[in-house]
Length: 224
Image 1 (spheres, rainbow, N blue to C red):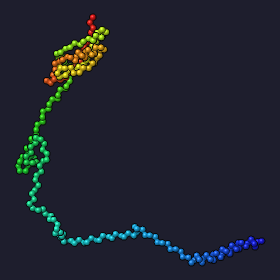
Image 2 (spheres, rainbow, N blue to C red; image 1 turned 90 degrees about the horizontal axis):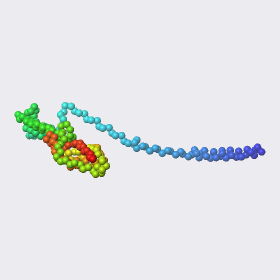
Image 3 (cartoon, rainbow, N blue to C red; image 1 turned 45 degrees about the vertical axis):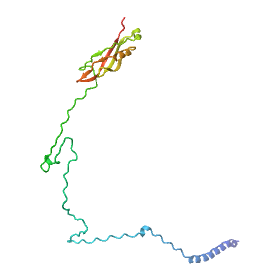
Image 4 (spheres, rainbow, N blue to C red; image 1 turned 90 degrees about the vertical axis):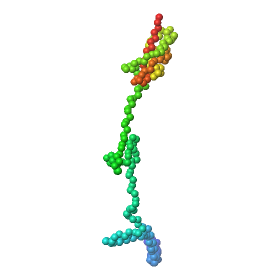
């Protein structure tokens, strides 16, 4: 029984030994492939830049040679000198003769004459267009007076009081604007209508007509 068990192992060992005898000679005869050479990079294949040639030795003691076609360095004769520079701007009222010179003189003995105009006189400021009555400004004299008409409704209701107005009298003495400063119901319109028809003498300030701002009081009273 033991021999039967060892029989497959013995057969396998003989097969492996036979295969080894066949494969080892074949493997020894096969040549290994030679690896291809690597491509040389382009930057390694670049040619080196040749060095610049050495400068030639400069000979001392020899004059420099000039080209026959070069322009002459010396200026030609017969060229007139540049004209004197004249001032490009002369302010109004300034006269300059013979150009600009030093210390009031110019070449050739001609003296520079400068005339400066006198400043214009300062005009007084214009008077204000509207002044308020008071102090040196007197109230203008009324030349046309119109009395207010008592409204019948206010008179029947015995409404009394004083309406205070602020009026602007223009340079001709005419009422230009009216504003109610203190109102009395049913009486304001009658007071404004009457004052609009008033006329005054023109008011003068330094000999110039001006407008006047003044306060006007209109009193309404019911008499029994």
